[in-house]
Amino acid sequence: MISYQEMSKEQLLAEQENLKNAYQEFQKKGLTLNMSRGKPSADQLNLSMSMLDILKKDDILIDESGTDTRNYGLLDGIPEAKRLFSQVLNVKPEEIIIGGNSSLNMMYDTVSRAMFFGFVDSEKPWKDYSNIKFLCPVPGYDRHFAICELFGIDMIPIPMTSTGPDMDLVEKYVAEDETVKGIWCVPIYSNPQGITYSDETVRRFACMKTAAKDFRIFWDNAYNVHHLTDTPDTLLDLFQECKKIGTEDRVLMFASTSKISFPGAGIASFAASVRNLEYIKKQMSIQTIGFDKIKQLRHVKFFQNLAGIEAHMQKHRAILQPKFDVVLEALDRELAPLKIANWNKPNGGYFISLDTLDGCAKRVISLCKEAGVEMTPAGATYPYGKDPHDSNIRIAPTYPPVEELKQAVELFCICVKLASVEKLLK
Image (tube, rainbow, N blue to C red):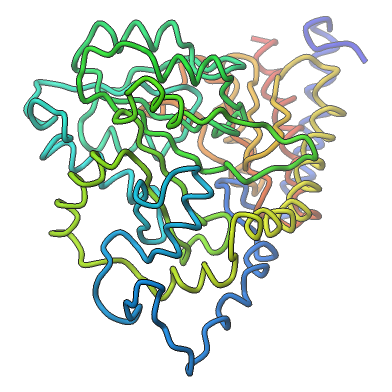
């Protein structure tokens, strides 16, 4: 099979006609499939159902500190939950806060508090600057970008490399401009490319010079236990690297059980230096008396320890790996010989990132939607929804059953081919 770029105009026109016919056959099927977000499937959610019965009505719901978990108190979480998630994030229990069900909520609240009150080392609240900026590795997580957009924070795209964000650019921006206040990072199995930051990248984050005293790294560990292979990626511990040189105040680490237990009823965690957390907890104490401690206790009893979480994630892997294989095998078979797209083969996480020929992503997404397959909007992986190349597409294989996924990816490949032929015929 020759690539599309090697085809004559006549060959491309013949290919276009064949693809149109195949596409119309899919339209007749009346599909309603959704690959738009990285949601766990029902099979994955069922893995945690016994958690709901782990607390009995006659149980004494007192945590190890003597607090009745049914009552008020313990703003930063029960000791057992702090200890469990300190293992997940490799921090001390006093360096962690256990929150509600959403780490995204904790990230939003952290930005909001910084806007109104700054951080412990801030000269003034962020809102008192004429404008502030965040560095945004791209392609990246659309919900991170949405937080910045809501608060009017200017976003500076930073290209991702195979080892993480372009650190030459990161270091230049943070060293020269005190209004650059933060950077969003998904450091292991990044959303959407599945890239894990190299040791060198992590060390450069720890030791880089920043013009802003209150510069913060929002270190979103959304996928740190979400492995898909027997040879998982490993991530150097940024917090410990920062501690070695006294820059630990710049790190804010987030994680949750959203894709471990229940997205709507899990628990989130936020780790940082004790100096950071003491300042933040004073503000949190006005916001809430405490989060759901019964839910925290339920998670601790269910998972027990980090080994329990890791064993549970192997059950997730057994469900997810075949789905990723379905997509990757189809891409290799249908698109690789044509040389019209590039994609990652992640060792973990929730997404596959694919780049089409420039100017084709929106057309691919539109074609998929018109044939009944909903996907993440083109441009969503860039600030303000503007992909300068109109090429990146985030594929989310996790939610549909395997048989539906096979249909969806078959249609997707047809749409990529059709959009590519149209582009080349212009």
